[in-house]
Image (cartoon, rainbow, N blue to C red):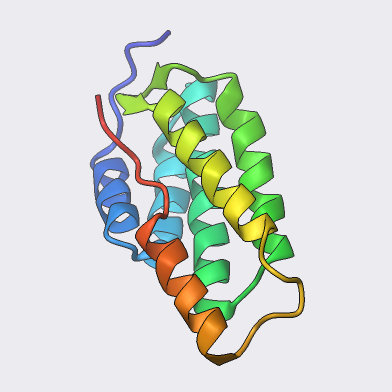
Length: 135
């Protein structure tokens, strides 16, 4: 475990993510990853957060299903090595929430992209979306 101190943009990216501004958060995580320096674990954490933000943006703003599942699955693999916590973040809890979110999306019909039922499902998914919790 390193004593690396996260760049200020990291905290801003987490705040954007937690308020549901996933596109903005993804861009901020990208910037933070460049500032992460040589701490490979911290960089891996930021890249995983970027993938999650991109996945949730695809899901909630573009109705994507499979691409969102793929990105979240990749992020979960990366985060598994960083449990229970890294960079002041409760990675264990995030993984639990992320797994639940991924399974919820996986359970949706592949061809459902329009209509009231789809909009209601997206609304509920957004309300249950994972949050990044600081320790």
